Image 1 (tube, rainbow, N blue to C red):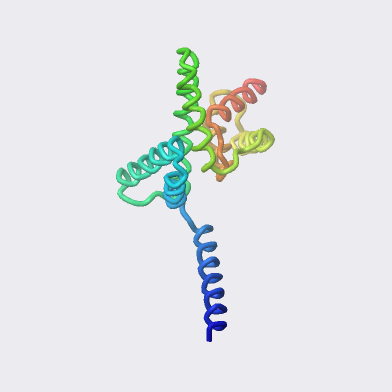
Image 2: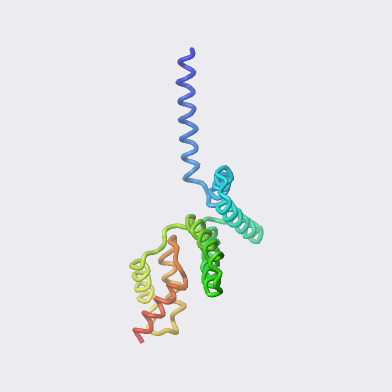
Length: 177
């Protein structure tokens, strides 16, 4: 009887592990952040905890604003906005000579970027721009907006720095003119 219960316990354990593994794949970004908040609390990682709480608050604020849960694309868009804010802050603090704040913002940026999907490589961006120019038939800077929009849609699902993309499009279109 004792042996049977151990076998049952092991099979129950494996069922729980399988269930949790399935839940990991289906976990939304907000759920992942919440579980990482708990992990940061247990690890007493103050900076990570602070950043994750800020991200969670931003997501909840956006959900309240939209009166519904955010889908993955909207959550990623929100994270990209937070990354852009951090990069701008780093630039401004650097100009102001505040190295302590530059370091803090850089650490926050690294934590937030860990939740973003892989970024588009330069080759992927160039290919998307070439395709977008061909699709839109653009031949001057005046059509830059349409090209950037088409290139962004071609790179959907990847993290794309909008400023870098528009700079590349501007450079490519200025060569054509």
